[in-house]
Length: 177
Image (cartoon, rainbow, N blue to C red; front, side, top):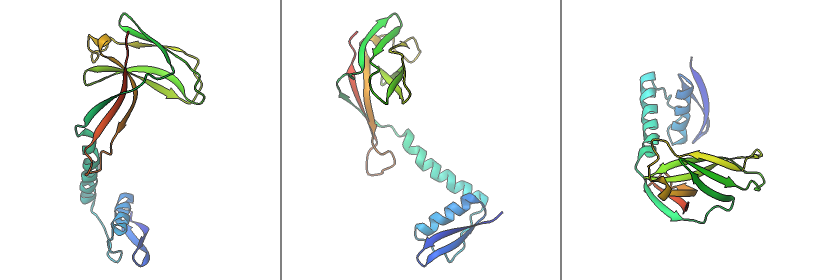
């Protein structure tokens, strides 16, 4: 089934024909990027798959590029009342007094060999004030008590900007048990 798409070109609206919905999107992009609307743009299914595979590869390649990780020391979050170890578990006590954003869970994450506790927040009211985090997982190092941090926040630079080296900044605070 062939479809027609209206795209704005240099002389106003132009109709572009395509073999499928994706062909039409490519045709519209072609015109918007300066292509001539006078010529019919049709990509065969094989060419379309190749084009989509190439675009997807470029987008996903930025996700697996090794990033430079920097650590910034930060203050401990004010909603955390206490953190204590009980065997292979960490008990975290929190204050649930922030209106609109509530702590729903606390999870452990390993980043470059150190263990970070991070919160999962939701907008619905949560009554729980104590969370138990299991530290017996295979990705948690055995000396986790000396390498335990609170993940206060993180930021990632633009992974698709070719002029910026992708980097990840982690704001953390050391947890003393």
